[in-house]
Length: 221
Image: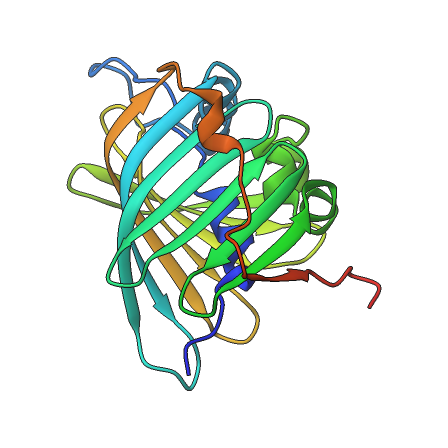
């Protein structure tokens, strides 16, 4: 049986991180601090973001799932993920509530955005109230042709994040979220556009007629 992917919302939120600014070709290999500072500055300068994406879900004891679609993001706190193939699904945040609609289950899972912030340092960073160096322990991974790997571990505990950034302009080409149970969510991006104006109506979610509405449990439950 297919299950809702609402548990992957932290991965969805972190995936909105855009990129660090480009560095001149004559500069030496940037330090870890240089990269983290660049990502922080770039995100603060990004007011909107859209991209095509591919997602691979590997859950322990389940078959691998691959999906693709388009993501839109606009500050403050608005986003829309349209999963188009092979399983349709929609995740929308209107700045107050995250709605996760699975048409196969005919179910909408509602999560207060403040709850997502409280449960994820990554979400706090994306929404402009977090700091990479303050909230994460970061290490540089191997540098391959045209790319640099980076690992982030939340200081307060949580899933490990592995980033792959373009070595030329520091665009994030992909990320992998690994939780303590061994489940992984990997997302890659293409056709990235930043600071393009969007119609704000795309971030307003209307519950489909007849769909079940489920409120995500709080962390205290």
